[in-house]
Image (cartoon, rainbow, N blue to C red):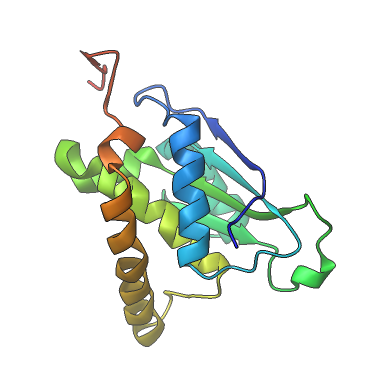
Length: 170
């Protein structure tokens, strides 16, 4: 059975081109399956892609931490029976600035794919606050990313150039 929920996203980081919607949706549908998230009732995913400044505010407001971060995940899948069909099951805030800072030009796309998988794994119950759960999370990330790498070109999913021109990232 394949994930069939709605996937919505808001891309508010002008420094990087937004991912092509059909490719992002296909990637997420496959990632949901690989993360072994519940598929019933049919629930949706909402993603917000924001820069460092907004992520810093979100991190302070929602998590109580200072500074920017890569991903913040809100999961409502702990009790899937409380969801109505069509409800949002996962909300994630993703920071492309962090992906570029960590991955650089060559690793940006891989880092962005990792952030999406990381968010889904948090929703699947994985944690990375302590050493042992963090090791398990890293292992699960690779278990999910390996087949995704074979099925998707991460550089097409998260391009750094739009229309053949380099973006302006001064």
